[in-house]
Length: 164
Image 1 (cartoon, rainbow, N blue to C red):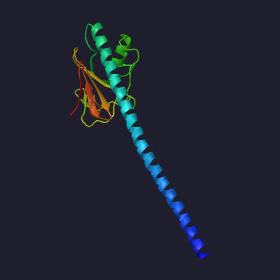
Image 2 (image 1 turned 135 degrees about the vertical axis):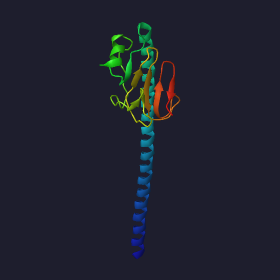
Image 3 (image 1 turned 120 degrees about the horizontal axis):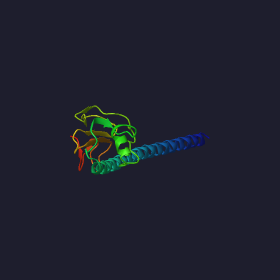
Image 4 (image 1 turned 60 degrees about the vertical axis):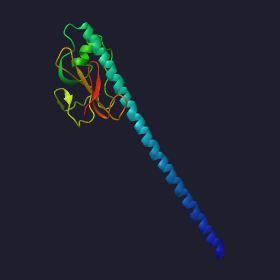
């Protein structure tokens, strides 16, 4: 009789240990999949940002071809559809819909001479132009990619670069 109780105890302990191991494995898989999912979302947002900057650069090139004065002048502003450079591009029909950063559409960066200060985290597409033949658009990438490193990146008329 005592032997049967001991077998029942070991059987119940064995089931509990198996359940704990199963719960642990499922938990590890959930953490790994959540991490992979967040990385994929981050890279997707960065791909949208790069495409948006490409579209804005081409819109500015179309604007430049039709403008006697050159690129729109700005001492630094977030690209917004209702005001400033965004409104000029829409009025000139160089761009029908002005893209906005997926996470930070209205967060203006701290900046020096039109370039966001080093260490700035997450901000709008920031346009700067004080010369009629030059412009800079600064944007923030969340991860490293072929186009730029995580952090502040700047696009100009014909180039795209990463800040140090």
